Length: 286
Ligand code: 7PJ
Image (cartoon, rainbow, N blue to C red):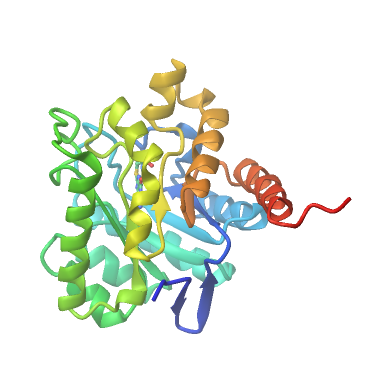
C-alpha cells in the first residue's frame, strides 16, 4: 500500500499534497550563507519564520555535507544540534527532522523533541538503524555514491544511474525493515548532488517518477545546489528561481517533500502550481 502520511507521537503529516521542509544549518561552513545560524536564538527565530511561511518540517543540521567538507566531532555536532532542536520543540508545533548520520546525535535529538531522522548516509553507520527502530520515528534514507562527502564528487560513474540509485534504496529499505523500522516510517531520497555530476542530476530529475514504484514518500533536496548554479552560471545567492523551477518539476514527477532554504517563495510557487493543477483536473464547462 502506498504510504501517504507520516505519524509520530500523535503528530500526523499528511502527504496527499506536497509539503515543504525548511533548512536550518547550525554550522559555520554550510555552502549557502543565508541558511547558517550560529546561535540558538537566531536558529529558533528562523525556524519560527519558516513555519509561518509554510514549512511543515524544519530540518536541523550540524555537520556540513557540502562536497569536500571536513567531518565534525560527535561532541561538536551534539553541542550544535541538540539545544536548537529542544528550543524549536518547545516553541513550535512543527515536525523537526535532524540531518545527521551519528546515532548519538539521532538519539539525543529524539529525546530533545525531534520527530524524524534525515540521514544522507541512509543509516549506514553502526547503530543508526537501531536507534530509529527503538524510537519508531520516521526516517529519510538518501542515496549517496560512497559514504564520504569529501570524495563523492571525484569519480561519478554509473552504468545505469536510476537503476543503481533504485537498487541502493531497495537494499537500504530491506535492511531497515530487517532492523525493525516500519515500512510506513521510511521516506526515500535519491540524493541530488551526492556523487552526481550536472548531467546525472538532470537525468535523475527528468526520470524521478521511476522512484514512485517504491510507493513510499519521496523527498528531494535541490535547493541552491550546484546543479542549479552550474547550469545558470550563478553563485549561491542567485539560485532561487532555478531552485523553484526544479522543485515544481519534481512535484510533477511525484515528489512529496521539498527540502529548501527559501520557504516563503517555495510555498507561494507551490500554491499557485497546485491551484492550477486542481483546475486542470476539472471538466471543462462552457
Ligand atoms: C540533502 C540533505 C538532500 C536530504 C543535504 C545541501 C547539502 N538531506 N541534506 N536530501 N542535502 N534528505 O543542502 O546542499 O538532498 S546537505
